[in-house]
Structures are given as structure tokens and as C-alpha cells.
Image 1 (cartoon, rainbow, N blue to C red):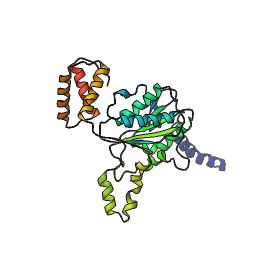
Image 2 (image 1 turned 30 degrees about the vertical axis):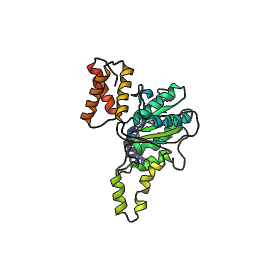
Image 3 (image 1 turned 90 degrees about the vertical axis):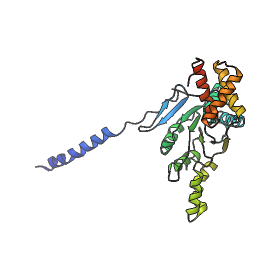
Image 4 (image 1 turned 180 degrees about the horizontal axis):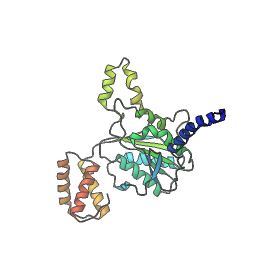
Length: 290
């Protein structure tokens, strides 16, 4: 057999392998169409920004008992949308007190004011892919993006917090100027207090053992705390929902049923107020979009 024939036979398997790998390789991702919507959800496998045509949100005027946090976050977001400097924000505190609702309501208000701002929701589980997401957003400097991660927290063995630094610090390249990061959490330091205390007590150098994780919250320029609401605020939330959706019931009945509802739940919060209102509206035959 000639040398050329032997070489051809040797190359055939390599060519077939190369062709097979090319077929298996994912196609290059098309550039996101940021004009498709004002809101997107980041998904992986494959990476893509999925337009959200309708965002589930509450009108900012219906958020009761969070006036200071509302005004602070709204002003910070307004600065960013105008191209000015702004701080990343951590909204932390009691469950069901409107942390994520406030972020979405602020975005809607900024859009209502005619300022350009898009919101991109990032799941905590997808934090390891955030560098790739930032690369997409960096290519569209004509847009301003509010990157939002809801219910952010870490356990003692969770390494996702390292990916968060890419958003807050940006590494050597820096965070894109057209991206601002807002996160909500039930924990001020993003990890359980007992985990922090345990690592301090068992580490050779207690101070350094948890500094890297605890300091994550220090990287947010804004800390906005949310606390359990009073009974007056709880009732005011329900009255606001009733007025907005045209549900009319006597005040004494509304008060009695609302208090009984929160007693069965063992808590008062914006979420409990909304759940009671949905039940009340259904009993009154009023359809409410949820």
C-alpha cells in the first residue's frame, strides 16, 4: 500500500471524530434582542435571555409601611437610569414584607417616568454563569440594566458566593457601567448566623474564617431593612388592595375578618395581607389578576 493510501486511512477516523464533535457543539448564541421587552429572565443550558412580556408586580402606591426604603431605592434607581452613579442594593429582613415587590415596582415607576431601564432576573442557582451574563449586557451600552436576584442566601458549604463578587466588584475588568445589582434576602449577612458563629469557634484564625462571606453584604452600597408590620399597616394594605380592585365591604367586617385571618397564620406581613385580600375578593365575586 502506498504512503498516501496509509495516510488517507489514518485521517479518516480523525475527520469523522472532528465532524462528530462539530455536530455536538452548541451553535453560537445569537446576540440578545434587548428591544424585545423591558424585562428578561436569564437561563442557562443554553445561555439565553428570555423576554418577559408581563411582569407580575404590585403598584408602588400599594406598598405600605416601607416609605423610607421605597424613597431611597427609587432615588438610587433614578440616578442610575439617568446615567449617574448609583449603589448596588441589598434588601433584607422579614419574609413577605415586599422586598421583591418593591424592586419590581420601582422598575415600573422608573419606566413610567420615561427613563430607560430594563430588568434582568437572575436565579441564585445560576450565579456561576453571571460572568457570561455580564458579557452579554456589556455589549449593549446604550441600555441600562437592573440585575435582580431574589431570595439570595448561602449555606456554609455554598461556593456560589464567589460568583457574586463578579457582579459586585467585577474583577479586573470591573462591573459594566450599564449594570446595577439589587438582591433580596431574609439574612443581613447572606448566611445563617449559626454558621458564622460555628466557623468562628472552630477556625484556626476565627476572624479570617468568615470574613470573605460576611463581607459580601459590605459590598452593597445600600442596605435596606424590612421589619414585621404593625396591625395598622396590615389593615391599611388590605384597604389599599380593596380600593384598587373595587372590592367594597363594611369596615367592621373587613377589620374582624382580616385580624382573624392573620391570627390563623400566626404573622402579619404584606404577603398575608395580599392572601387575605385574594380570598375576600373571591368571596365577593371580584376577579383579581395574581
